[in-house]
Length: 389
Image (cartoon, rainbow, N blue to C red; front, side, top):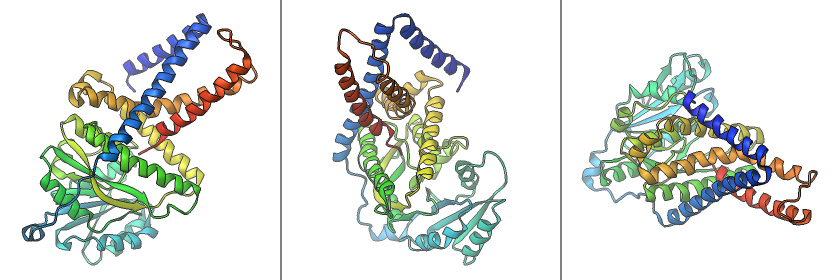
């Protein structure tokens, strides 16, 4: 957050507090109306994305010709690893099963210098020469995007994709990406494959995750694609043109949702992100603590992304266009704002059971029913707003 942003945010909070203190009834009504309008705009926007995304078909591959099969480009695969030595055998089996000429694969297992166990496991897996182990020197910040940036300098491919350790991509995903890139305009710099889970039916949390990802990758992102609004990327299975990735200097190593930030930065350079008709399966967390930490990280990253790109709103509007600018406010900013406001609104509703203040002549019972209706509506809006990347 810059000093100017901090001053603006604190000023808005001070104005809201002053309105409620000086003119409790009118100020409270105005503040509530503004908040409700924000929730409604966010929900309507996502419903619209869902509607148009349902009709948008991801980019599918065409049947390859003989020339295509004989001239597959070099494809770099980055796999960041940290304390994941136990997953390597399953990972390497999935990578070896990829339906792509092995001689045209540039697979890099990215490990941290001080993670001796994973380094040893990676070197053992790479003994046959199919994989290359890239050891990232110890340094700060200790993040996935920093590791990817370090490995990017060694990439030999025309195209590049990131897979996480537990990922199980469909075997023909790389071929589909190459076929799509060949047919799409030069401005398309990235293709985002769908993500979902191979353990979706394990428990309630994993089922909710699967529903969440189905909505996100099958409807909301295709909706952004169709409307030409900057698309926050998923954390894996992003297929890039290497030249475009280097042109924007790779990932932001300090952003904990570096993928979301990267999609916005590509859009600001006039590049497009499209969705790809292929799925990568990964493992959904089945523990509440892990779920909470993951969601917290996503929200933190969205805060970072919004603050960084809003340092110069006029420049953002020039780069992304009017639709892209307001879409960014609703899709990224709205997610953060609703998460911050939800506890406040829930607290006010709970407090209303103990502090009964008649408003505009309505009896307490009517207010309580209205409050309950607002709470239920807010819960629906909050769930729509919290659905994450």
